[in-house]
Each structure stands twice: as C-alpha cells, then as structure tokens.
Image (cartoon, rainbow over all chains, first blue to last red):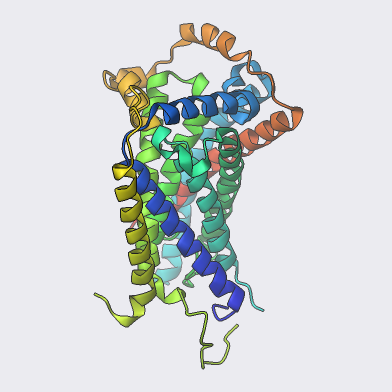
Length: 102
Length: 158
Length: 116
C-alpha cells in the first residue's frame, strides 16, 4: 500500500501541509503586532462571517425551535447514555476478564 | 488493492483535521488572519462543515473500537486513530476536549460568556498542543515519508 | 539524532525553519505599520481578558438568562443568509449534538475497558 506512488505523494503532501501550518502559526505568533489594517480586516471579516455564513445563524439559535428541540433532546439523553455506558463498560470488562480466566 | 479500514480512517481523519486546523488557526486572531486571507465567512463555513465530518469520524472510530472490545478482537490496528496507548490515546483525549469545547462554543448564545471564553481558551491551546504533536507524529513515523524517486526493490505487499 | 531514517523529516524541518526565520526577519525589518490598539492577541486571550479573569466556578454553572433577551434582539438582524446555509447549519448542528452524547458514552466505555 505504501509503495503506491499516489499514496507516497499524498503522504508527502500532508506532511508538507502540516509543516506549513506549523510555520504559519509560528510566524503569526511572533510577527510584529497586528497593524490597524489587520485589525480592521479581522473585524470586517468577522462581520461578514456573521452576515453570510453559519456563524450568524448559529448565533440565532435561540429563535430556532427545531434546533432547540435537538439540543434539548441531546442534553436529556446524555445522562442516561452515560449511566448505560458505565454499566456497559463494566460489563464488557467482565466479559473480557471471564474469557481470560477460563 | 487492499484498502484497510484503519488506513482509510487515518487519512480521512488527517484531511479533515488539516481543514479544521487551517480554517481554525486563521480565525484565532488578527495576526493569524493572513492564513485565510481574512475571508472569515469561508473559513467559518469550512470549519463548521468539517467539524460535523470530524464528529462523525470520531463516532465511527469509537463505535468500531467498542465493537472490537465486545468481539474480543485484540489485533493491533496500526493505522487506527484512537487506541489505548501512546499517540493514539493522546489523539483520543485531545479530540474529546476539542469536540466538547467546540460544541460549547457552537451554542455560545445559550451559555454565559465566561463559560464560552473558557471553552475558547481551552480549544485554542489544545489545538496548539495538537499541532505540535502532529509534527512529533511525523517525526516518529518518518519512515512513511518514502523517496519518490527510486522505487523500492522489495516486492509490493499491497 | 540525525540518523538516515529521519533524513526526510529533518529536510522538511530545516526547510520550514529557514522559511519561518526568513519571513520573520523580513517582517521585523520592513517598515512598521502603526500598531493597532486592540485585537492584540488571540480570540481566546481576548475572551479571557474580557470574561474569564474574574471568574469563579460558580459563574461557570449559572447562566445569564436576563442577558439573553437583549442578545437575541442583537442577533436577529443577521438574517441575510441563504436557505442553503440554514439547512447546512441545521444539519451540522443536528449531527454534532445528536452524536455528542454517544461519543461521550463511548469514551466512558472505552475508559472503563482500557484502565488496567
């Protein structure tokens, strides 16, 4: 699998991409502080994200009854699922242990 | 060609993580904006869409791992993203923290702002740690970076 | 340290370190634009300064209900999105919040099973 040329190329691409990302983050952290221009661009970008992307919609979540219902459902099933999974975890542990001891 | 499940999961995960990281680090602050050319509408869009894919991938991996435990399958999955030790465990923990804090930020208007600020802070610092760990992971797994020029003399294993 | 096996890693590392250092040197030597008074630091840091510094655990657990009315009014004017965005937002939010309890549950199972 690893000998295929496209797989090798792909792995190189991903490695280079992550190096680029790390270099970008280091450059961003160490470069001279944000200029007025950058700060303006940042705020304008955030405003446009509010207006034309999902950020604004997600901000508006408390007016969306369907999503409210989804979130209420997930919070209400969270605790039972956690309890069930604790029981299931102990169960699987015992199930594995029993086999090992036999 | 024998494509293995854990191999596919590994690289799907890597692609989604890369998209999330690029759009996310671009949104960190005014100094980082050049990474996404201050186009936060697109960055936000990409970040949210790939977050959903990321959650689905996490769910599939966790479900797969649970079923492996039920079936008492102790075979080592070399490429799998989560596991009980080493970098797999580290990925598992950081993923959980990122998903939970990310979900808190997602519904930020539901909570008070101090909780969101706290979640945002953790989300940011964990992603720095995770990015550093990816470089460490590349260092450890450097043998996968094969030379493109000379074909290996070994027979293909598929 | 610099053994043959890690050669490709060190190649990448040196190239990108050099690239980073060159860009930083160039940026610091180029004429400085006037520095912005605000937005210095990341969003997390800003939030920390604004909201987290004087926070107690108690604040984390209580919600500010009285603020919500004004907040929703403030955000209700962000309505310029197309319906595709609305659908995608619904889809992604639904996926994430429905799978979240299962992810937490699954990781509890795995934590219990994995602990020695």
